[in-house]
Every structure is written in structure tokens, then in C-alpha cells.
Image (cartoon, rainbow, N blue to C red; front, side, top):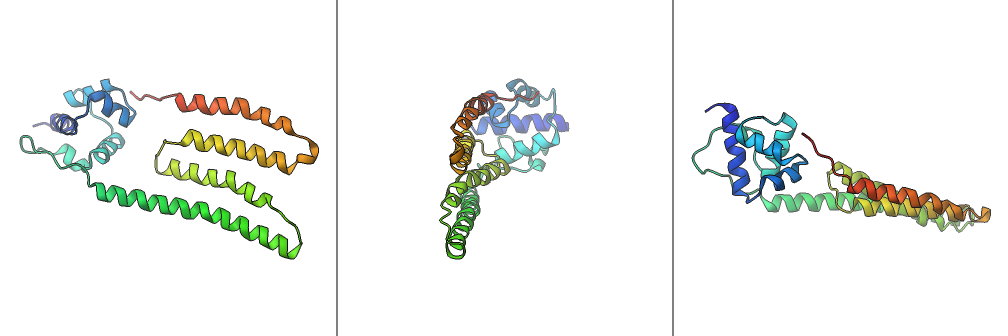
Length: 197
């Protein structure tokens, strides 16, 4: 069997074994269902990067995708324990990074209070947008899109609030007007879905 036909057969078998439609798989990979259909018919071959994403999605290796297998031979679904452990580790790393921001804020607050007798409570307020930046970065690293709009929105409004409270004696309440078009842009950019050919 030719490599292209083997790949097409394996992609079709894996998709059906997982109970997915071509459209559902396409949405997971951020491709069109027409592309998935071409791959499964052997009319086209996905590039190596997409092949790696498909293999990760199904919990197999790229080598598994391009090798012949016995009739109806399908690997078991990916190990959920490993995935849960990985997600747990990611959560712990994210929480540690975020808590470091609050620890630094506490240190700044205490040092200014002891050494200069200044009650700089704003250090804690500035921790909110800083924490949002860390959370946004980790979400981008790990490819999670869920809650991104909320995080970016919290970052925007907490940053504007910090700037406003820091400069309150100058009566800069109009700074919140900047937030309205930016919030609309955040919502619109989140609803924009990119499709690859």
C-alpha cells in the first residue's frame, strides 16, 4: 500500500473509532472539513506540523499514522491519567508563578511600610494586572483558549483602574473611555475564527 493511501486509511480509521465527524475533527485542528476529507481520500497529505498535531490529538505517534496496521486495529484512546497529571502540573506551575507576583507585592508593601513609613496599598492592586499577564502568557504557551477573553478583559480594566487610582489627584476618570473600544476589540477578535486551507 502506498504511503498516501496508508495515511488516508489510518486517519479515517482513527476518526471513526473516536466517533468524530470530519467537521468536528477539522474544528479541533483549526482546518476546514474539506481538507480533512482530502486527507482521508488520499487526495492530499497534511504537512508535518499538522501531522504531529493529529498524532497528538489521537494519542499516537506520527510513525503510527504512516505505517500499515491490521484490519480494524485501532490504538486505545490516549491515557487520561497522564493528561490529568499534565494538566495538574500546569495548574501548579501557573499558580506558583501567579503567587510570586503577590509575594513580591507583599515584600514591597512591607518594606515601604517599615523603611519609609509609607502605606503603599497600591502594590496589591497592581498585582491584579500583573497576574493577568502571567495567566495570559501561560495560556498562550499551553494553547488553551478558554477564558482568554475574560483574562484579557480583567487585565484591561484592572490596568485602567490602577492608572486611575495612581493619578486620582489629576482627575483622570476619562481614562475609562479608552477601555470601551479596547473591550469591543477584545470581544471581536475572540469571535474571529481563522481557517486554514
